[in-house]
Length: 72
Image (cartoon, rainbow, N blue to C red; front, side, top):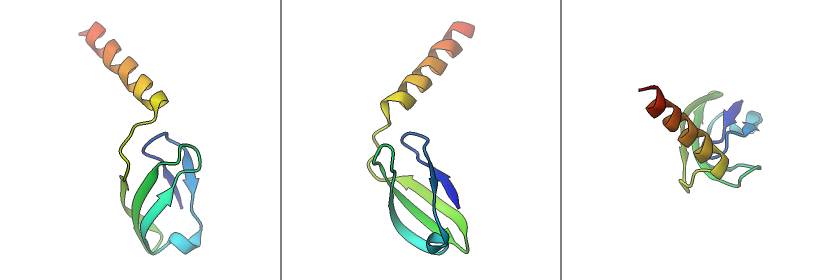
């Protein structure tokens, strides 16, 4: 099962031990803590515990907002 980190977008590859899991997972790239809930190998919920956005993601979002304002 793969999930994307909500902080930086890094793809976390979780093995079968996480098929029925409810708890924290740490991103290897940005060290964000994600609270996940899975059932029978399917993701039911993902939430970032320490909701600090990775700086590179914040820059991309800001660029998108700026372009949207210029287009309007």
